[in-house]
Length: 167
Image 1 (cartoon, rainbow, N blue to C red):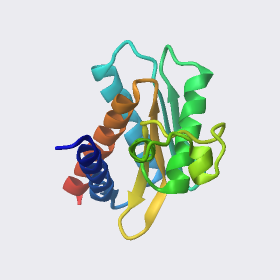
Image 2: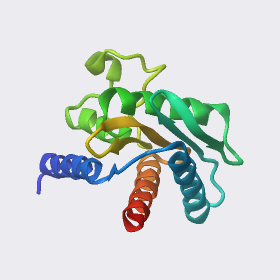
Image 3: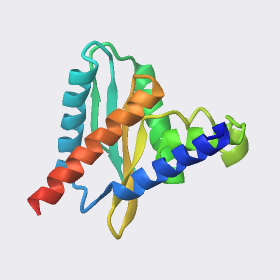
């Protein structure tokens, strides 16, 4: 498989992942549950890493936690990833990989947004509600971008499984 075909299949897999992780609802209590789940996952996977977790819905921060070892910079990264997800309604990792597949890295040029306010690095994932659309973002910041992405996806996937079992 050529490198371009491999990138294309990775991008397709990320889109399928986004479509598969649609939630039946997303309340304030759900934001707390997801945030708590992400904290626990982070502590198990990377116990000595400083990670910031931010969850927003409709422009309101419903959950924000900065683990030991984080700085204000982590929160700024989370804000920028949130902006990317909410504006483009895709994971921040997908946007970064999409740009890279075209030989681009500059969101300012492609999307006409300021890099002070947007980031195309992994860790931001859209919160889609079934039959509604994107209502916000769940963001992890502090690990390498692929790990940030994997952690937030795992948390959302586990939460969706729990929700579906309860219905």
